[in-house]
Structures are given as structure tokens and as C-alpha cells.
Image 1 (cartoon, rainbow, N blue to C red):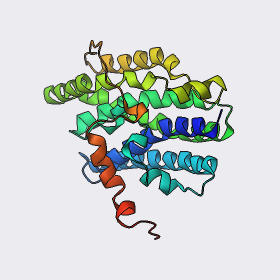
Image 2: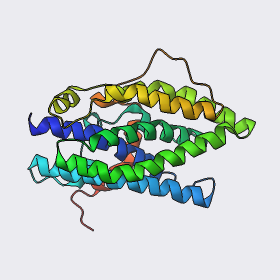
Image 3: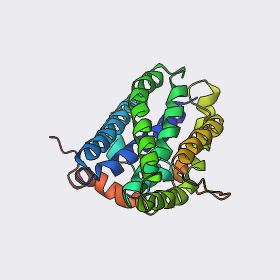
Image 4: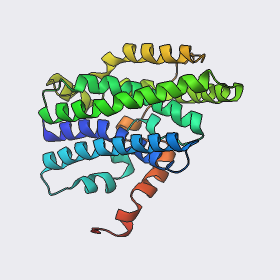
Length: 251
């Protein structure tokens, strides 16, 4: 396996954390309460911290004087490998929580397995990150239950969010060529094997929240291949603005 396979595999994990962290950072100061606002900001910081660990490792593997900042800010849209789910907009609080919950359950399962990777660096990152993601999953699950089993309006909004975001969940379990090559060497994770556990956990929480699980046979995909939704360009225009406007700027 070439380093490039491993680098692309790491992008598939790290870009999810980067883009979701960027989405959550847009909400800083806009939470429904001070406590919730701080909690969501901390989740964003956790995700960006994880991204840094992954990108520092990619920079080391690349061996071409790249830095974590180059990797975060100087790639084109097609070079980002995040799933479509994490780039969906911050429509309203219930939508944000639903997006977070649907990703958190997957993220936790992924990190559980990644701790056993034969790549010592990835295993170490996973062991540190899973402590944070355990909290993320608990936070979003609790809010799903509160909103789903809350007022008529909160129930309706979360149900609409579940119905809209469900079509992005299947992509989480698609295996790219780089996924397959790293998994064969015991480095990467076969995410397809996480699918049953994922939907079982998600269904348990949604049922407890009095929410209906969508019946859907058609799902959207493309993010893992670098084919993104219309939202991605706007995210990157914010994320990359300073670096693109003032190249090689040093603080």
C-alpha cells in the first residue's frame, strides 16, 4: 500500500470532523441557551482538534513540507472526502441536533474499531477522540429525546429533520477503494460492518423520542468521491477565506 492510499483514507475520516466542526462553529453565540451554546461550541472545538491530529499525521506522511494548514485550507472542493450529511445547513436547532446525532452514532462506532488499527498513530488518535465523541453522542441523543417527546412544534421540526437527513445516512457505510486497501492491511475499518449496529442504535433513540423512522430505499451519495452538495462551496469560501486572501500569512 502506498502512502497515498493511507492519506486518502485519513481524509475520509478527518474531513467529516473538519466540515461538521466548521458548521457548528457558525452557530457560536446563536444557541437557544447559554449552556447549550457553550456545549455546541465545545463540540466544534473537539472536532477541529481531532482534525488537527489527523492532518498533522497526513503532513508527516506526505513528506513534501506540507503543513496541517495547507491541508485544511488549500485543497479544492473535489479533494475533500467528507460525507454529504455533515455539510448540510444549520436550518434550525432541531435540524442541527438531528444532523449531529446521525453522525455521532456512526462516529462513535467508527472510533471504537479504529482503536484496534495496526497503524499506531490512528489508533492513538481514536483512543483520545472516542472520549470526546462519547459525550457528543450522549448530548445529541438526549436532545433528540427532549425535542421529539417535547412540544408539538419541537416534535414536528425534529421529525421533519429526520425525514430530510435520513437519505444521507447510507453513504456513511460505503467503502471507497482506499477504504478497501487500508482495511485489507488491518489499518482501516470496514464501515459496511457497522451498518446494522448503527441503524439499531439510531432506531432505539428515535423510538424513545416518539419519532417515526423513515422508510426510504433511495439515498444520496457522492461526498466520499469528492462530489458535494451546493452547500460545500459556501462552507469552503468561509473556511478558506483568510488563507486564500493573504497567502502564507503568519500570525
